[in-house]
Length: 192
Image 1 (cartoon, rainbow, N blue to C red):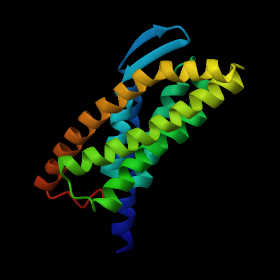
Image 2: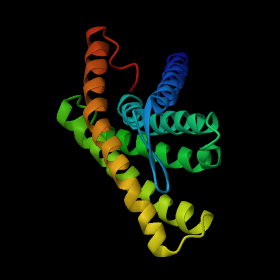
Image 3: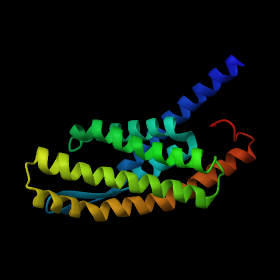
């Protein structure tokens, strides 16, 4: 019994590492649009953060999402200083998606449950990200007035919403497909 549990934990660790790598690569698949206060970027990283939570559950999924996103920040000089906060906020993205899917929907893999889980995680992340944009980036680091910091927040809203909507579309499609494939191969218990 103990050997089976150890094997299961090693397998989860391996899948979490693969998901962290997918988050890193998907965060790099992006379109950058210059704006007055910096760059807005549209990317697929949020989709993989939600998928990590759905597939691995809240703890392993949150860890994979946070590590993959922080590694992306560490590979890009423009984002290096944000890596610790990204680890937390994107980790919460995966954690929220996983917590909703595991505890509310009891891992019942269907598109509606995964959409609701991803949407909850996306809204949570957007609130955290925009709060970071206002307080940390705007007022603390840049020394902006509250009005100017709100301007930075408003400028970040379109890309944040777009990335959230893309995640709500992509993560459930991939989640349902992967879970069906695992079930067909009689491996559905591997990630639980």
